[in-house]
Image 1 (cartoon, rainbow, N blue to C red):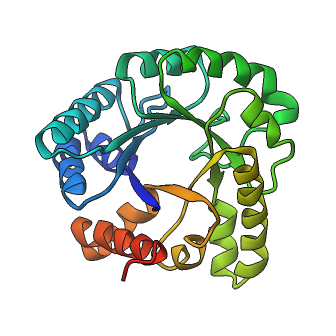
Image 2 (cartoon, rainbow, N blue to C red):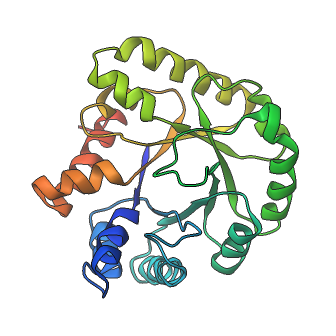
Length: 252
């Protein structure tokens, strides 16, 4: 089963560009939940350019209320840089999953994974603290990452594969060569006992190949899904993504 976690950052970005509360993040997140997704993702950056502290709390309460009312098990995934600020956010909101992502000053979006030759000690310290919050830990990595075994050794439960390069290769007709690298990394993760998530620029076209990735448990998608929603509507976009993933799960 491949779960879909919708990243709602872009909804907040549009709202913040004008001020006020339009579009209404809570209202649209609830609409996304009603479509049957398995998770919601937020990335509260330090500059609060999209998701704010209040948003993080609002989404937490919305998911909890939704699960209680409907008997569902929607997951809450909060992603961000492994800083003391982020650890505090996790402690306050207690999501299902914390996805640790390396952040460069001034970056537009996350565009690289951790380098275990440099980041191991730092990550081990932060993961040890996060484990006390009883959340699942995922580490953002690139396909072909070296020393993947270290992720398991320092306490990670899953990896999230950065799929931006795959999406670019797909658009250039180089899908087989690109997918092979992701496949090799996913198989290695499986052998190590690490779950596999993925996210970045996945759409209903390139997912038809990527959904075949061994051990893929979750895709977290924001920009591409919301962009697609501008063309076809939010409900249609979410349901098309779910349909694509269900077909990958062997459900017609």
